[in-house]
Image (cartoon, rainbow, N blue to C red; front, side):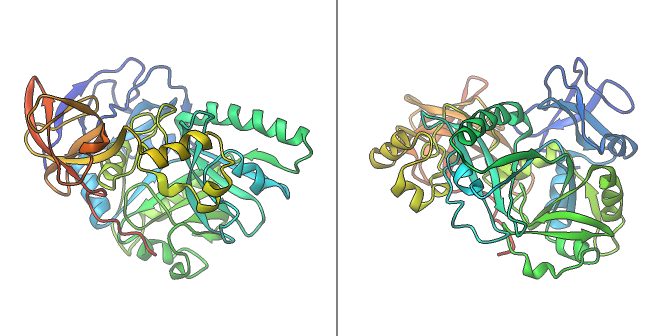
Amino acid sequence: MNRIFTKAWKTFSGLTNCHNLKIHYYIGCSRKYASSGATKRTCLYDFHCKNGAKMVPFGGWEMPVTYAQQGLSTSHLHVRSEVGLFDVSHMLQTKFTGKDNVAFIESLVVGDVAALKENQGTLSLLTNTTGGIIDDLIVAKTHQGYIYVVSNAGCAEKDLDHIKKNLAESQSKGMDVDMEVIDNGLLALQGPKMAQVLQTGVDFDLSTLPFMTNTLATVFGIPECRVTRCGYTGEDGVEISVCADRAEELASALLSSKEAKVNLAGLGARDSLRLEAGLCLYGNDIDEETTPVEASLLWTIGKRRRAEANFPGADIILQQIKDKPKSKRVGFLSTGAPARAGTVVYDEAGEKVLGKLTSGCPSPSLNKNVSMGYIDTPYAKVGTNVKFEIRKKLINATVSKMPFVPANYFT
C-alpha cells in the first residue's frame, strides 16, 4: 500500500461496518464521509457487505468507503490502470416528459438543452435567482423523447422541492411537462479497460457511444438499461441505470469479467479520482453562494442562453462575465504536508490572504498534493506562487492548470 494518505482510526456514531463499528481506513480528500442520521440504503447494500465493504453515512445514505484488502490508494490506482466498479445508486434519477420538457428544463438550468442531439447529454447547473448553484447535474435527451437527468444525492430533497415548485407553476400556465423519479440502481464502471469489460455483455458496438451520449440497451442479459458514457473519475467509463432488483446481478457479472480485473471501489477512491480530474464536489467546491463564473464553469452556459439571458440569475451571472469575478476557483500543486479543505491561501510573501481551499488530498497518481479553492482573481493565473497555512506553518504551493491528471474520455 502506498501510504501517502493519513492513516487514522475513526469511530462514528451510527456508523456501519459489516464486521464491527470501529473502522480503519485512509482519509484522502477533504470529505470525511461521516454525517449523522443516515437511514437510506441502496439496492446493493447487502452486496457491499458480502464483499467486505466498510460502510459510512454519506449524504443520508449508508455507502461503502473502502473494501477489505484494498486501501484507498490501491483502489484509486486500479481505476487509473484497469477498471473499477462504483455503486452510485444514491444519485437522484429523474425523467421529464411532454412536448414542453426542453423549455421547462431550460427554465431551471444554464445549458443549451435544445441544441442537444438525440441521446446526447451535458453537464449543466441548476441556478437560483442570485446566480448561485443549487446543484450540478447531467441533462440528457433520449430517443424515447424524454429528458433523463442525474443529480446529486445530497441535494435530492432540495432539488425535488425546487423542481416541483417550478413544475406546478409551469403546468398552471399550460405547459405540457411532467416529472417522474426513476427508482433504479446506478452503477459506474470506470477505467481504461472499461470497454473491454462491457463490450462482451452489451448488444451494441461501444465505439458508437462517445463521451456524454447514452442508449437503451440489454446489458449482460438485463433489458432496458440506460448506458451513459460519462463518469466522475476522468477515465473512460459508463454509468448504467438498471432495474433495482437486478443491480446485484449486473454487478456480479461485471466483477466476473475475464477481459480485465474489475475491483469494487468506494467513496474514498471516488473523491481522490475526481479531484485529480479537476471535478467539483457539490457542497465543498460549489454551492448556492457560488456562481458559475466564480467556479470556472462558464463553459456550461450555452451561447444561445447567454444571448437570451433567460435562465435563473442571468442578470448577475452575465454582469460577472463582463466585469470578471472578485475570486475564482483554481487548482494548486504542493509538496510536504497535504492541504485540506479550509486551508488558508496567502500570497507568495505570506502576508496577504487570497482565499481558501475547498478540496485537497495527496494524489496517488502524481505523488504530489493536489487541491482546489477560491482565490482573488488577480492571483489566479497558472504558475503563480502562493503559500498555504498548514499547522501554523507556511507551505509553498503553485496555482496549477486542471485537470491535474489528463482526462481519458472516449471522444
